[in-house]
Length: 267
Length: 267
DNA sequence: GCAAAAGTGTTTCGTTTACACCCATGC
DNA sequence: GCATGGGTGTAAACGAAACACTTTTGC
Image: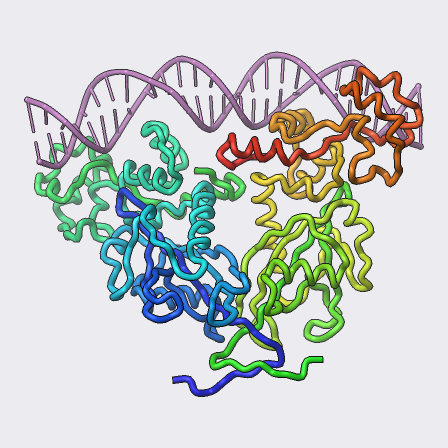
Protein backbone atom coordinates (compact mmCIF):
# COMPACT_ATOMS: atom_id res chain seq x y z
CA UNK A 1 0.00 0.00 0.00
CA UNK A 2 2.65 2.49 1.06
CA UNK A 3 5.45 2.77 -1.41
CA UNK A 4 6.92 6.09 -0.36
CA UNK A 5 9.55 6.45 2.25
CA UNK A 6 10.16 9.10 4.85
CA UNK A 7 13.50 10.65 5.54
CA UNK A 8 14.73 12.68 8.51
CA UNK A 9 18.10 14.24 9.35
CA UNK A 10 18.06 12.52 12.75
CA UNK A 11 16.91 9.05 13.67
CA UNK A 12 13.31 8.85 14.84
CA UNK A 13 11.73 6.08 16.83
CA UNK A 14 8.39 4.66 15.83
CA UNK A 15 5.52 5.58 18.13
CA UNK A 16 2.65 3.24 18.88
CA UNK A 17 -0.19 3.00 21.36
CA UNK A 18 -1.34 0.04 23.42
CA UNK A 19 -4.57 -0.16 25.30
CA UNK A 20 -5.33 -2.24 28.37
CA UNK A 21 -9.08 -2.76 28.14
CA UNK A 22 -10.89 -3.85 31.28
CA UNK A 23 -14.28 -5.41 31.57
CA UNK A 24 -16.30 -6.87 34.40
CA UNK A 25 -18.72 -9.77 34.06
CA UNK A 26 -20.31 -9.33 37.47
CA UNK A 27 -17.79 -11.45 39.27
CA UNK A 28 -14.34 -11.15 37.74
CA UNK A 29 -12.28 -8.52 36.04
CA UNK A 30 -11.50 -9.28 32.44
CA UNK A 31 -8.82 -8.06 30.09
CA UNK A 32 -9.26 -7.84 26.36
CA UNK A 33 -6.37 -9.32 24.38
CA UNK A 34 -5.70 -9.91 20.71
CA UNK A 35 -3.62 -12.73 19.37
CA UNK A 36 -0.73 -11.70 17.19
CA UNK A 37 -0.94 -13.03 13.67
CA UNK A 38 2.52 -11.94 12.56
CA UNK A 39 6.04 -11.87 13.89
CA UNK A 40 7.41 -10.79 16.23
CA UNK A 41 5.68 -12.72 19.02
CA UNK A 42 3.38 -14.40 16.51
CA UNK A 43 0.75 -16.43 18.32
CA UNK A 44 1.23 -14.64 21.62
CA UNK A 45 -1.46 -12.43 23.08
CA UNK A 46 -1.05 -8.68 23.32
CA UNK A 47 -3.04 -5.53 23.99
CA UNK A 48 -4.87 -3.99 21.07
CA UNK A 49 -2.88 -1.13 19.65
CA UNK A 50 -0.89 0.07 16.69
CA UNK A 51 1.25 2.75 15.16
CA UNK A 52 0.49 6.41 15.49
CA UNK A 53 -0.55 8.29 12.39
CA UNK A 54 0.82 11.74 11.77
CA UNK A 55 -2.58 13.39 11.95
CA UNK A 56 -3.89 11.97 15.19
CA UNK A 57 -3.10 12.30 18.87
CA UNK A 58 -2.15 9.25 20.90
CA UNK A 59 -5.65 9.17 22.37
CA UNK A 60 -7.25 9.17 18.93
CA UNK A 61 -4.87 6.44 17.84
CA UNK A 62 -5.80 4.24 20.80
CA UNK A 63 -9.51 4.66 20.10
CA UNK A 64 -9.10 4.01 16.40
CA UNK A 65 -6.99 0.90 16.84
CA UNK A 66 -9.33 -0.53 19.38
CA UNK A 67 -12.27 0.00 17.10
CA UNK A 68 -10.42 -1.60 14.21
CA UNK A 69 -9.23 -4.62 16.12
CA UNK A 70 -12.13 -5.34 18.41
CA UNK A 71 -15.01 -3.12 17.23
CA UNK A 72 -15.45 -1.90 20.77
CA UNK A 73 -16.40 1.61 21.76
CA UNK A 74 -14.67 3.07 24.74
CA UNK A 75 -16.18 4.61 27.83
CA UNK A 76 -13.10 5.84 29.55
CA UNK A 77 -9.55 6.24 28.38
CA UNK A 78 -6.67 7.24 30.51
CA UNK A 79 -3.00 7.45 29.72
CA UNK A 80 -0.60 5.28 31.67
CA UNK A 81 2.49 6.85 30.19
CA UNK A 82 5.18 6.18 27.63
CA UNK A 83 7.19 2.97 27.65
CA UNK A 84 10.56 3.56 26.10
CA UNK A 85 12.90 0.66 26.84
CA UNK A 86 15.37 0.58 23.98
CA UNK A 87 14.77 -3.03 22.94
CA UNK A 88 11.15 -3.49 23.79
CA UNK A 89 10.37 -4.21 20.15
CA UNK A 90 12.80 -6.41 18.21
CA UNK A 91 11.96 -4.84 14.84
CA UNK A 92 12.98 -1.27 15.48
CA UNK A 93 12.94 1.29 18.23
CA UNK A 94 9.30 1.68 19.22
CA UNK A 95 7.99 3.96 21.94
CA UNK A 96 4.62 2.84 23.19
CA UNK A 97 2.12 5.20 24.73
CA UNK A 98 -0.09 3.02 26.84
CA UNK A 99 -3.65 3.61 28.01
CA UNK A 100 -6.19 1.84 30.01
CA UNK A 101 -9.82 1.79 29.01
CA UNK A 102 -13.02 0.53 30.53
CA UNK A 103 -15.79 -1.35 28.76
CA UNK A 104 -19.38 -1.55 29.95
CA UNK A 105 -20.49 -4.89 31.25
CA UNK A 106 -22.88 -5.31 28.36
CA UNK A 107 -20.19 -4.61 25.78
CA UNK A 108 -17.75 -6.82 27.58
CA UNK A 109 -19.99 -9.85 27.22
CA UNK A 110 -20.47 -9.85 23.48
CA UNK A 111 -17.49 -7.80 22.53
CA UNK A 112 -15.28 -10.40 20.88
CA UNK A 113 -16.38 -9.63 17.36
CA UNK A 114 -12.87 -9.57 16.08
CA UNK A 115 -11.75 -13.05 15.15
CA UNK A 116 -8.79 -13.13 17.44
CA UNK A 117 -9.82 -10.82 20.24
CA UNK A 118 -10.77 -12.48 23.50
CA UNK A 119 -11.56 -11.64 27.10
CA UNK A 120 -9.27 -13.17 29.71
CA UNK A 121 -9.97 -13.40 33.37
CA UNK A 122 -7.54 -11.17 35.23
CA UNK A 123 -5.92 -14.07 37.02
CA UNK A 124 -5.58 -16.23 33.96
CA UNK A 125 -3.63 -13.89 31.77
CA UNK A 126 -1.11 -15.73 29.61
CA UNK A 127 2.41 -14.52 29.08
CA UNK A 128 2.10 -11.52 26.79
CA UNK A 129 4.04 -10.18 23.82
CA UNK A 130 6.57 -7.33 24.06
CA UNK A 131 6.68 -5.72 27.51
CA UNK A 132 2.94 -6.06 27.91
CA UNK A 133 3.21 -8.07 31.12
CA UNK A 134 4.95 -5.08 32.62
CA UNK A 135 2.43 -2.64 31.17
CA UNK A 136 -0.39 -4.70 32.64
CA UNK A 137 1.11 -4.51 36.11
CA UNK A 138 1.42 -0.76 35.76
CA UNK A 139 -2.14 -0.51 34.52
CA UNK A 140 -3.58 -2.48 37.40
CA UNK A 141 -1.60 -0.45 39.89
CA UNK A 142 -2.89 2.78 38.41
CA UNK A 143 -6.48 1.64 38.25
CA UNK A 144 -6.35 0.58 41.88
CA UNK A 145 -5.12 4.06 42.72
CA UNK A 146 -7.52 5.90 40.44
CA UNK A 147 -10.63 4.15 41.65
CA UNK A 148 -10.26 5.81 45.04
CA UNK A 149 -10.67 9.24 43.53
CA UNK A 150 -12.59 8.83 40.33
CA UNK A 151 -15.92 7.19 39.67
CA UNK A 152 -14.48 4.74 37.17
CA UNK A 153 -16.42 1.82 38.54
CA UNK A 154 -19.57 2.97 36.81
CA UNK A 155 -17.93 2.76 33.42
CA UNK A 156 -17.49 -0.96 33.93
CA UNK A 157 -21.09 -1.68 34.82
CA UNK A 158 -24.25 -1.25 32.83
CA UNK A 159 -26.01 2.04 33.20
CA UNK A 160 -28.13 0.50 35.91
CA UNK A 161 -26.62 -1.69 38.53
CA UNK A 162 -27.27 -3.04 41.99
CA UNK A 163 -25.26 -2.26 45.05
CA UNK A 164 -23.88 -5.80 45.38
CA UNK A 165 -22.69 -5.62 41.77
CA UNK A 166 -20.88 -2.39 42.48
CA UNK A 167 -19.39 -3.86 45.59
CA UNK A 168 -18.17 -6.97 43.79
CA UNK A 169 -16.53 -4.71 41.25
CA UNK A 170 -14.68 -2.72 43.87
CA UNK A 171 -13.63 -5.91 45.56
CA UNK A 172 -12.43 -7.40 42.29
CA UNK A 173 -10.36 -4.34 41.45
CA UNK A 174 -8.90 -3.76 44.88
CA UNK A 175 -8.66 -7.38 45.95
CA UNK A 176 -10.22 -6.75 49.33
CA UNK A 177 -13.52 -7.47 51.03
CA UNK A 178 -15.89 -4.80 52.26
CA UNK A 179 -18.61 -5.02 54.83
CA UNK A 180 -21.84 -4.81 52.92
CA UNK A 181 -23.52 -2.34 55.25
CA UNK A 182 -20.55 0.00 55.33
CA UNK A 183 -20.23 -0.14 51.57
CA UNK A 184 -23.88 0.81 51.12
CA UNK A 185 -23.53 3.70 53.51
CA UNK A 186 -20.37 5.06 51.97
CA UNK A 187 -21.67 4.90 48.43
CA UNK A 188 -25.04 6.41 49.27
CA UNK A 189 -23.50 9.15 51.39
CA UNK A 190 -21.59 10.51 48.42
CA UNK A 191 -24.92 11.30 46.83
CA UNK A 192 -23.66 10.48 43.36
CA UNK A 193 -25.96 7.50 43.00
CA UNK A 194 -29.63 7.76 42.31
CA UNK A 195 -32.08 4.98 42.84
CA UNK A 196 -33.83 3.89 39.67
CA UNK A 197 -37.54 3.90 40.20
CA UNK A 198 -39.80 1.60 38.23
CA UNK A 199 -40.91 4.57 36.23
CA UNK A 200 -37.39 4.99 34.95
CA UNK A 201 -36.80 1.43 34.01
CA UNK A 202 -37.35 1.90 30.32
CA UNK A 203 -34.39 4.19 30.32
CA UNK A 204 -32.20 5.17 27.38
CA UNK A 205 -30.23 1.96 27.65
CA UNK A 206 -32.75 -0.79 27.66
CA UNK A 207 -32.95 -3.08 30.57
CA UNK A 208 -32.78 -6.75 29.73
CA UNK A 209 -33.58 -5.75 26.20
CA UNK A 210 -37.32 -5.53 26.90
CA UNK A 211 -39.53 -2.54 26.17
CA UNK A 212 -42.21 -1.34 28.48
CA UNK A 213 -45.34 0.62 27.74
CA UNK A 214 -45.28 4.06 29.26
CA UNK A 215 -48.90 3.73 30.34
CA UNK A 216 -48.54 0.78 32.63
CA UNK A 217 -45.94 2.44 34.73
CA UNK A 218 -47.04 6.04 34.77
CA UNK A 219 -49.00 5.63 37.99
CA UNK A 220 -46.07 4.31 39.89
CA UNK A 221 -44.02 7.13 38.50
CA UNK A 222 -46.36 9.68 39.97
CA UNK A 223 -46.12 8.19 43.40
CA UNK A 224 -42.39 8.08 43.43
CA UNK A 225 -41.19 5.53 45.93
CA UNK A 226 -41.73 2.07 44.47
CA UNK A 227 -42.27 0.50 47.88
CA UNK A 228 -45.40 2.44 48.74
CA UNK A 229 -46.93 1.82 45.35
CA UNK A 230 -45.67 -1.72 45.04
CA UNK A 231 -48.98 -3.55 45.56
CA UNK A 232 -50.60 -1.71 42.67
CA UNK A 233 -47.73 -2.50 40.33
CA UNK A 234 -48.63 -4.85 37.50
CA UNK A 235 -47.28 -8.31 38.18
CA UNK A 236 -46.02 -8.51 34.63
CA UNK A 237 -43.19 -6.17 35.62
CA UNK A 238 -41.70 -8.80 37.80
CA UNK A 239 -40.70 -10.83 34.82
CA UNK A 240 -38.32 -8.07 33.96
CA UNK A 241 -37.09 -7.37 37.45
CA UNK A 242 -33.94 -8.82 38.73
CA UNK A 243 -32.88 -9.12 42.29
CA UNK A 244 -32.17 -5.97 44.13
CA UNK A 245 -32.61 -2.23 44.01
CA UNK A 246 -30.99 -0.67 41.04
CA UNK A 247 -28.98 2.52 40.94
CA UNK A 248 -27.48 4.72 38.34
CA UNK A 249 -24.54 7.07 38.42
CA UNK A 250 -25.45 10.76 38.40
CA UNK A 251 -22.73 12.71 36.63
CA UNK A 252 -24.14 16.07 37.59
CA UNK A 253 -24.23 15.32 41.29
CA UNK A 254 -20.72 13.97 41.02
CA UNK A 255 -19.48 17.27 39.59
CA UNK A 256 -21.18 19.17 42.39
CA UNK A 257 -19.84 16.88 45.03
CA UNK A 258 -16.32 17.04 43.63
CA UNK A 259 -16.39 20.81 43.69
CA UNK A 260 -17.55 20.81 47.30
CA UNK A 261 -14.67 18.53 48.26
CA UNK A 262 -11.91 20.38 46.47
CA UNK A 263 -12.10 18.09 43.49
CA UNK A 264 -10.94 15.22 45.59
CA UNK A 265 -13.57 12.63 46.28
CA UNK A 266 -12.48 9.51 48.05
CA UNK A 267 -14.30 6.25 47.46
CA UNK B 1 27.60 17.61 12.59
CA UNK B 2 25.14 15.03 11.33
CA UNK B 3 25.25 14.58 7.62
CA UNK B 4 23.51 11.23 7.31
CA UNK B 5 19.83 10.89 6.97
CA UNK B 6 17.42 8.29 8.26
CA UNK B 7 14.72 6.73 6.17
CA UNK B 8 11.64 4.76 7.16
CA UNK B 9 8.84 3.17 5.16
CA UNK B 10 6.27 4.94 7.33
CA UNK B 11 6.35 8.45 8.74
CA UNK B 12 7.75 8.71 12.25
CA UNK B 13 7.28 11.52 14.68
CA UNK B 14 10.22 12.96 16.57
CA UNK B 15 10.30 12.11 20.27
CA UNK B 16 11.61 14.49 22.90
CA UNK B 17 11.54 14.81 26.66
CA UNK B 18 10.73 17.81 28.82
CA UNK B 19 11.38 18.07 32.49
CA UNK B 20 9.54 20.23 35.02
CA UNK B 21 12.15 20.77 37.73
CA UNK B 22 10.92 21.93 41.11
CA UNK B 23 12.93 23.51 43.85
CA UNK B 24 12.08 25.04 47.20
CA UNK B 25 13.97 27.93 48.78
CA UNK B 26 12.38 27.57 52.20
CA UNK B 27 9.42 29.75 51.38
CA UNK B 28 8.36 29.39 47.79
CA UNK B 29 8.26 26.71 45.16
CA UNK B 30 10.53 27.39 42.22
CA UNK B 31 10.55 26.10 38.69
CA UNK B 32 13.69 25.81 36.60
CA UNK B 33 13.36 27.22 33.10
CA UNK B 34 15.73 27.72 30.21
CA UNK B 35 15.45 30.51 27.71
CA UNK B 36 15.23 29.39 24.12
CA UNK B 37 18.08 30.67 21.97
CA UNK B 38 16.68 29.54 18.64
CA UNK B 39 13.40 29.45 16.81
CA UNK B 40 10.70 28.42 17.31
CA UNK B 41 9.70 30.43 20.36
CA UNK B 42 13.13 32.07 20.48
CA UNK B 43 13.47 34.16 23.62
CA UNK B 44 10.63 32.43 25.41
CA UNK B 45 11.20 30.26 28.45
CA UNK B 46 10.72 26.52 28.37
CA UNK B 47 11.46 23.41 30.37
CA UNK B 48 14.86 21.82 29.93
CA UNK B 49 14.63 18.90 27.54
CA UNK B 50 15.58 17.64 24.13
CA UNK B 51 15.34 14.92 21.57
CA UNK B 52 15.55 11.27 22.44
CA UNK B 53 18.59 9.32 21.28
CA UNK B 54 18.15 5.86 19.90
CA UNK B 55 20.19 4.23 22.65
CA UNK B 56 18.55 5.74 25.71
CA UNK B 57 15.22 5.48 27.46
CA UNK B 58 13.08 8.55 27.99
CA UNK B 59 14.20 8.71 31.62
CA UNK B 60 17.87 8.65 30.63
CA UNK B 61 17.19 11.34 28.06
CA UNK B 62 15.56 13.60 30.63
CA UNK B 63 18.46 13.20 33.03
CA UNK B 64 21.05 13.77 30.32
CA UNK B 65 19.39 16.86 28.91
CA UNK B 66 18.96 18.35 32.33
CA UNK B 67 22.61 17.79 33.14
CA UNK B 68 23.66 19.32 29.82
CA UNK B 69 21.45 22.37 30.08
CA UNK B 70 21.57 23.13 33.77
CA UNK B 71 24.31 20.91 35.28
CA UNK B 72 21.87 19.77 37.90
CA UNK B 73 21.68 16.29 39.36
CA UNK B 74 18.27 14.91 39.96
CA UNK B 75 16.86 13.43 43.13
CA UNK B 76 13.55 12.22 41.88
CA UNK B 77 12.17 11.78 38.43
CA UNK B 78 8.65 10.82 37.60
CA UNK B 79 6.90 10.56 34.30
CA UNK B 80 3.87 12.75 33.67
CA UNK B 81 3.01 11.13 30.39
CA UNK B 82 3.25 11.72 26.68
CA UNK B 83 1.96 14.89 25.07
CA UNK B 84 0.98 14.25 21.51
CA UNK B 85 -1.05 17.14 20.14
CA UNK B 86 -0.46 17.14 16.42
CA UNK B 87 0.74 20.72 16.14
CA UNK B 88 2.45 21.24 19.44
CA UNK B 89 5.74 21.89 17.66
CA UNK B 90 5.68 24.04 14.51
CA UNK B 91 8.77 22.42 13.02
CA UNK B 92 7.58 18.85 12.73
CA UNK B 93 5.48 16.33 14.58
CA UNK B 94 7.07 16.00 18.01
CA UNK B 95 5.81 13.78 20.80
CA UNK B 96 7.03 14.96 24.17
CA UNK B 97 7.43 12.65 27.10
CA UNK B 98 7.27 14.91 30.13
CA UNK B 99 8.66 14.35 33.61
CA UNK B 100 8.79 16.19 36.82
CA UNK B 101 11.90 16.23 38.94
CA UNK B 102 12.80 17.54 42.35
CA UNK B 103 15.96 19.39 43.30
CA UNK B 104 17.36 19.61 46.82
CA UNK B 105 17.13 22.99 48.45
CA UNK B 106 20.92 23.37 48.40
CA UNK B 107 21.11 22.62 44.67
CA UNK B 108 18.17 24.83 43.94
CA UNK B 109 19.91 27.87 45.36
CA UNK B 110 23.09 27.78 43.33
CA UNK B 111 21.83 25.72 40.47
CA UNK B 112 21.72 28.27 37.71
CA UNK B 113 25.13 27.46 36.29
CA UNK B 114 23.88 27.33 32.80
CA UNK B 115 23.93 30.78 31.23
CA UNK B 116 20.26 30.89 30.41
CA UNK B 117 18.77 28.64 33.06
CA UNK B 118 16.89 30.39 35.84
CA UNK B 119 14.66 29.60 38.78
CA UNK B 120 11.22 31.20 38.69
CA UNK B 121 8.87 31.52 41.58
CA UNK B 122 5.85 29.32 40.97
CA UNK B 123 3.48 32.24 40.82
CA UNK B 124 5.63 34.34 38.53
CA UNK B 125 6.00 31.93 35.68
CA UNK B 126 6.04 33.71 32.33
CA UNK B 127 4.16 32.46 29.31
CA UNK B 128 6.07 29.42 28.14
CA UNK B 129 7.07 28.00 24.77
CA UNK B 130 5.22 25.13 23.05
CA UNK B 131 2.50 23.60 25.21
CA UNK B 132 4.61 23.98 28.32
CA UNK B 133 2.00 26.06 30.14
CA UNK B 134 -0.29 23.08 29.84
CA UNK B 135 2.41 20.64 30.88
CA UNK B 136 3.13 22.76 33.94
CA UNK B 137 -0.49 22.63 35.03
CA UNK B 138 -0.47 18.87 34.64
CA UNK B 139 2.77 18.62 36.58
CA UNK B 140 1.51 20.67 39.50
CA UNK B 141 -1.69 18.68 39.61
CA UNK B 142 0.22 15.42 39.71
CA UNK B 143 2.68 16.60 42.34
CA UNK B 144 -0.16 17.74 44.55
CA UNK B 145 -1.65 14.28 44.23
CA UNK B 146 1.60 12.39 44.64
CA UNK B 147 2.69 14.19 47.77
CA UNK B 148 -0.17 12.62 49.67
CA UNK B 149 1.19 9.15 49.10
CA UNK B 150 4.89 9.48 48.49
CA UNK B 151 7.55 11.13 50.59
CA UNK B 152 8.58 13.48 47.83
CA UNK B 153 8.85 16.45 50.15
CA UNK B 154 12.17 15.27 51.46
CA UNK B 155 13.73 15.39 48.03
CA UNK B 156 13.11 19.11 47.95
CA UNK B 157 14.76 19.86 51.27
CA UNK B 158 18.31 19.38 52.43
CA UNK B 159 19.10 16.09 54.05
CA UNK B 160 18.42 17.70 57.40
CA UNK B 161 15.48 19.97 57.90
CA UNK B 162 13.27 21.42 60.58
CA UNK B 163 9.62 20.73 61.02
CA UNK B 164 8.55 24.26 60.09
CA UNK B 165 10.56 23.99 56.87
CA UNK B 166 8.78 20.78 56.00
CA UNK B 167 5.47 22.35 56.84
CA UNK B 168 6.13 25.40 54.69
CA UNK B 169 6.98 23.07 51.83
CA UNK B 170 3.74 21.14 52.15
CA UNK B 171 1.83 24.39 52.37
CA UNK B 172 3.60 25.76 49.31
CA UNK B 173 2.84 22.68 47.25
CA UNK B 174 -0.73 22.19 48.35
CA UNK B 175 -1.62 25.85 48.76
CA UNK B 176 -3.20 25.33 52.16
CA UNK B 177 -2.37 26.14 55.75
CA UNK B 178 -1.87 23.51 58.43
CA UNK B 179 -2.11 23.84 62.15
CA UNK B 180 1.45 23.56 63.41
CA UNK B 181 0.70 21.15 66.24
CA UNK B 182 -1.33 18.82 64.07
CA UNK B 183 1.33 18.83 61.39
CA UNK B 184 4.02 17.85 63.92
CA UNK B 185 1.88 15.04 65.25
CA UNK B 186 1.00 13.63 61.87
CA UNK B 187 4.55 13.68 60.59
CA UNK B 188 6.04 12.20 63.73
CA UNK B 189 3.36 9.53 63.98
CA UNK B 190 4.38 8.06 60.63
CA UNK B 191 7.73 7.21 62.19
CA UNK B 192 9.59 7.93 58.97
CA UNK B 193 11.42 10.91 60.44
CA UNK B 194 14.31 10.62 62.81
CA UNK B 195 15.56 13.42 64.97
CA UNK B 196 19.13 14.39 64.21
CA UNK B 197 21.16 14.33 67.39
CA UNK B 198 24.18 16.55 67.83
CA UNK B 199 26.37 13.50 67.45
CA UNK B 200 25.02 13.05 63.94
CA UNK B 201 25.47 16.57 62.77
CA UNK B 202 28.62 15.95 60.75
CA UNK B 203 26.63 13.65 58.57
CA UNK B 204 27.42 12.50 55.01
CA UNK B 205 26.08 15.71 53.60
CA UNK B 206 27.82 18.47 55.41
CA UNK B 207 25.82 20.88 57.41
CA UNK B 208 26.45 24.52 56.68
CA UNK B 209 29.59 23.44 54.90
CA UNK B 210 31.63 23.16 58.12
CA UNK B 211 33.65 20.12 59.12
CA UNK B 212 33.79 18.77 62.63
CA UNK B 213 36.45 16.70 64.28
CA UNK B 214 35.24 13.22 65.05
CA UNK B 215 36.93 13.33 68.45
CA UNK B 216 34.98 16.23 69.86
CA UNK B 217 31.68 14.53 69.28
CA UNK B 218 32.43 10.90 69.93
CA UNK B 219 31.46 11.14 73.56
CA UNK B 220 28.05 12.56 72.82
CA UNK B 221 27.63 9.90 70.18
CA UNK B 222 28.22 7.17 72.71
CA UNK B 223 25.58 8.47 75.04
CA UNK B 224 22.91 8.71 72.42
CA UNK B 225 20.26 11.13 73.52
CA UNK B 226 21.54 14.64 72.96
CA UNK B 227 19.51 16.15 75.76
CA UNK B 228 21.16 14.21 78.58
CA UNK B 229 24.63 14.94 77.28
CA UNK B 230 23.95 18.50 76.24
CA UNK B 231 25.73 20.32 79.09
CA UNK B 232 29.02 18.59 78.30
CA UNK B 233 28.82 19.55 74.64
CA UNK B 234 31.44 22.03 73.46
CA UNK B 235 30.00 25.52 73.15
CA UNK B 236 31.66 25.89 69.77
CA UNK B 237 28.91 23.69 68.31
CA UNK B 238 26.35 26.39 68.80
CA UNK B 239 27.93 28.49 66.11
CA UNK B 240 26.86 25.84 63.69
CA UNK B 241 23.39 25.34 65.02
CA UNK B 242 20.42 26.90 63.42
CA UNK B 243 17.02 27.44 64.87
CA UNK B 244 14.96 24.41 65.62
CA UNK B 245 15.18 20.67 65.97
CA UNK B 246 16.37 19.01 62.86
CA UNK B 247 15.07 15.83 61.31
CA UNK B 248 16.06 13.54 58.54
CA UNK B 249 14.04 11.19 56.39
CA UNK B 250 14.56 7.53 57.16
CA UNK B 251 14.13 5.53 53.98
CA UNK B 252 14.23 2.17 55.76
CA UNK B 253 11.47 3.06 58.18
CA UNK B 254 9.47 4.39 55.28
CA UNK B 255 9.71 1.04 53.48
CA UNK B 256 8.60 -0.78 56.62
CA UNK B 257 5.76 1.58 57.23
CA UNK B 258 4.60 1.37 53.63
CA UNK B 259 4.51 -2.40 53.82
CA UNK B 260 2.48 -2.27 57.02
CA UNK B 261 -0.04 0.02 55.38
CA UNK B 262 -0.45 -1.89 52.14
CA UNK B 263 2.00 0.32 50.31
CA UNK B 264 -0.30 3.23 50.72
CA UNK B 265 0.89 5.86 53.14
CA UNK B 266 -1.11 9.02 53.39
CA UNK B 267 0.60 12.24 54.36
C1' DG C 1 -40.08 -24.49 52.09
C1' DC C 2 -35.41 -23.71 52.04
C1' DA C 3 -31.05 -21.72 50.84
C1' DA C 4 -28.81 -17.69 49.16
C1' DA C 5 -28.49 -13.00 48.60
C1' DA C 6 -30.41 -8.19 49.62
C1' DG C 7 -31.29 -4.80 52.71
C1' DT C 8 -30.93 -2.06 57.04
C1' DG C 9 -28.85 0.81 62.32
C1' DT C 10 -26.17 1.27 66.15
C1' DT C 11 -22.06 1.19 68.89
C1' DT C 12 -17.07 1.43 69.21
C1' DC C 13 -12.90 3.08 68.02
C1' DG C 14 -9.49 5.75 65.86
C1' DT C 15 -8.35 9.92 63.32
C1' DT C 16 -8.76 14.61 62.49
C1' DT C 17 -9.55 19.08 63.96
C1' DA C 18 -9.57 23.00 66.87
C1' DC C 19 -7.42 25.53 70.16
C1' DA C 20 -3.56 28.34 73.96
C1' DC C 21 0.43 28.76 76.41
C1' DC C 22 5.49 28.59 77.41
C1' DC C 23 10.22 28.70 75.70
C1' DA C 24 14.20 29.94 72.85
C1' DT C 25 16.29 32.83 69.70
C1' DG C 26 17.66 37.06 67.31
C1' DC C 27 17.33 41.80 66.96
C1' DG D 1 13.25 43.17 76.49
C1' DC D 2 10.56 42.53 72.88
C1' DA D 3 9.06 40.37 68.76
C1' DT D 4 9.26 36.30 66.10
C1' DG D 5 9.15 31.68 65.55
C1' DG D 6 9.61 26.90 67.78
C1' DG D 7 7.70 23.46 70.57
C1' DT D 8 4.02 20.84 73.10
C1' DG D 9 -1.22 18.39 75.04
C1' DT D 10 -6.06 17.90 75.38
C1' DA D 11 -10.90 17.88 74.32
C1' DA D 12 -14.64 17.70 70.77
C1' DA D 13 -16.28 16.16 66.37
C1' DC D 14 -16.22 13.31 62.80
C1' DG D 15 -15.65 9.32 59.93
C1' DA D 16 -14.44 4.35 59.66
C1' DA D 17 -15.08 -0.20 61.26
C1' DA D 18 -17.35 -3.88 63.52
C1' DC D 19 -21.29 -6.27 64.10
C1' DA D 20 -26.73 -9.50 63.51
C1' DC D 21 -31.02 -9.93 62.16
C1' DT D 22 -35.10 -9.53 58.86
C1' DT D 23 -36.83 -9.63 54.12
C1' DT D 24 -36.83 -11.04 49.48
C1' DT D 25 -35.75 -13.98 45.76
C1' DG D 26 -34.92 -18.20 43.17
C1' DC D 27 -34.94 -22.98 43.15
